[in-house]
Image 1 (tube, rainbow, N blue to C red):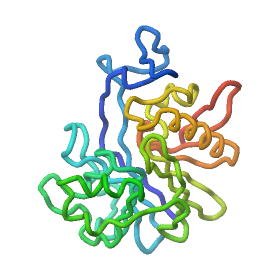
Image 2 (image 1 turned 45 degrees about the vertical axis):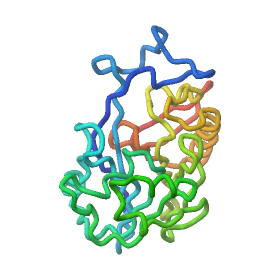
Image 3 (image 1 turned 180 degrees about the vertical axis):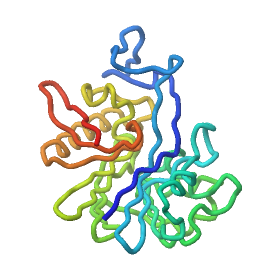
Image 4 (image 1 turned 60 degrees about the vertical axis):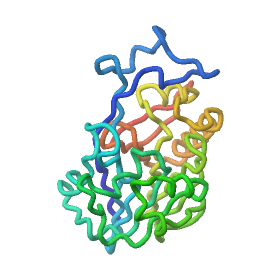
Length: 252
C-alpha cells in the first residue's frame, strides 16, 4: 500500500484559538517554541490518499474555495503526486468541518472526483453534512460511517470524538505496519504534543477532545504506529514517543 500526503494549503489562525484548561486563552504566556507568522498560528491543511494498488481511498478533501485563498490546492497536489482523480472511488471524512469536506467540488463547480462511488461520513455528523447547501449534489450519496467499520480491507475507522461529535481516525495496516490518519487530533504540533492538555476553541467538547488526544497519543506511542495529521506541518507524517511529561513528534 502507498499513502500519499496531499497539502491543500494552510490557514493562519489567531493565538486565542488555543485554550488552556478552564477554556483560558493564551496571552503573553504563550510558550516561546510556538512559531508565529505576523502574530498568527499557521496550520497546514493536509489530506491523505491511500492506494491499495486497485483504487484509492481519500481521507478528507480540503476546502476548495470555501474558506481562505491560501487553501484549496488539493487538485494541484494530486497532479504533482501523479494521482489520477478517476482512481479515487472512496472518500471518507474524519469530520465535517469545512476545511475537510468542500474539496468534493472544484472551484469552478465541477465534481472533484468524477468516479466517486462511496462517500463515508461519520454517522453522528451525517445531518451536519447534509445541511451544507454547496454540497447538495452529494447529500443522497453520503453513507454513515461507524467506528470499527472498514472502508477497505486495510482501513478501519476508529472513534475519536471531541473535536467534533463524530470525529474519526483511520487505522491503516499493511505488511505488519500501522499508520493512524487522525484528522484534527492536534492543531498546533509545536505545543500540543508537549502539552496535550491544551485544546482548541473550535473543539465541540474540549474535555472530551483532551481525553481523546491523550488516549490516542498513548496508543500511537506505545504501539510504535506512524501517524498522519490534517494540521501537522506538511507532510504531517511521523512517529510519537513519550517524554517525562508529555509526548514528542518525530517527523518522517
